[in-house]
Image (cartoon, rainbow, N blue to C red; front, side):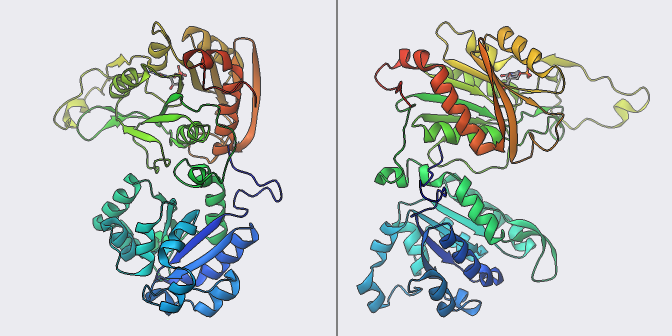
Length: 438
Ligand code: C5P
């Protein structure tokens, strides 16, 4: 659950943000970012790289942050006031905005050749980066490889946005706007990560799934026709990733089985990447043993091409009379999990366009699920690629509307409801660890 401050409702309240600024033109937006962070009641210390000083002055940053600004590892006065290791320990989160291609490369290599990169190596706090650079630099395989390395280490990559660039070109590479970065921080649940503030006892809160194993499936599956073509769907994976993060926040040990999506792994969650429904089925059946809660958010393809080809299919094959594609039914992953002799609490998701609740109820029964979350996908302002969602949680004896909200908040509400509704089943597996009171 998001850590909300009782005073101003911001989960940034009293949080200590180390803001790293590297030398991109977007650095001129850094004072605005500092102001917004402070408005959200966060404490901010700023560290710049040498080249950032070409774009923004220490005087401006000091004025808005209320703290001296540092860039030099060898500044003995600054080190005497707060040594760099102390500064690394001080941070609840490190945000680098803008993060240039060079800084991403140095972080990926684990270099410590200036104060900022040294702090990133020396801190246990979560690291978030907001890349900003020319679109060609962003798309370069070297930069993409560095970003992949950082993501695989749990670094949260915010953006970049698409649009007009300072160099006059258009494309991906713009730094996300300061207000978007603050909203990203607010919704990232960084501060309830077990690897960060929680470890220091800062975020507190209840952890009703402490000691429980939760498996979540997310994203679409791809069903190959040949090496270059596939059948798939529009699932972005955002809701499934949010459910995994919410289960983690509730204290669970979470495995996230992800279809092909372009999303960072939530910090502290074990991610397993799969492509097809058969791979997801195999992975899920392996992970579902000894699992307490299984949440199937993935939009699994119901069918796969009957004879995927190892070579690219030639157009001539289908020219004269069209091409009837023969399909085979995929195994139903969640129904297979629920049909095990000692199944976990099993919760499915369903996207419906009509007779939403009736269809959801019959699906829940047919697949022997404990509950199902149903989305009305005829409302295009929610679902699929949106950051918002609205749904109804349906179970044998009731239903509950989950109002339109961010996918992260909906996931937190869902996990809370599951821990309340199925407290006994969850407690049965490891009686000592599920709290019955919330
Ligand atoms: O039948 P439908 O696809 O609408 O059901 C949706 C639910 O079933 C989701 O929880 C989805 O993850 C799961 N499912 C599955 N395996 C399939 C198809 C759907 O686990 N082959």
